[in-house]
Length: 126
Image (cartoon, helix red, strand yellow):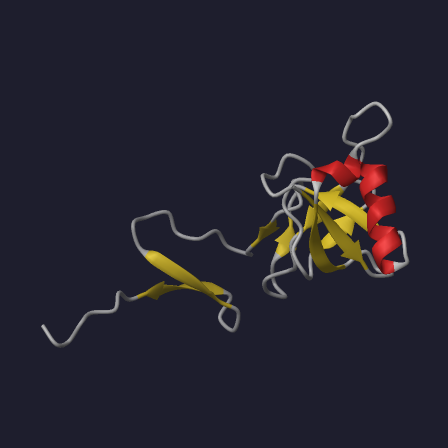
C-alpha cells in the first residue's frame, strides 16, 4: 500500500490516505508517484498530494497531520514541539539544551527551558 499526504496552500499536511499499489502502476507496470497523485486528484479534485513512506524510505519520515512538506529539500518536517526548539541541519527539532544522557526519564519544561526528571509512578497498594 502507498500513502499520500494532502497538503494545504502552505504545504502543511491536512490528511494522509492509503492508496492501493495498483493505482500507481504506469503503462510499463512500474509504480509511479504521478499516477498516485492523479488518482488522489480524481477523488478529491485537486493535485496538492505528495507520496510519503510508512517505512521512512522517502522524504525523511512518514508524514502526519500538521507536518510540513519542504519542497526545496523534498522532505517532511515534524511540527515544532516547543517554541524554543530549533531545526538542526538534518531538519530535526532540537531543544536549547540537550537532554541528560543517563538512565532517567525526562520531560521538557518550556517555562524553565530545562529538562525535568520524571519520577517513576509507584503502586501504593503494595
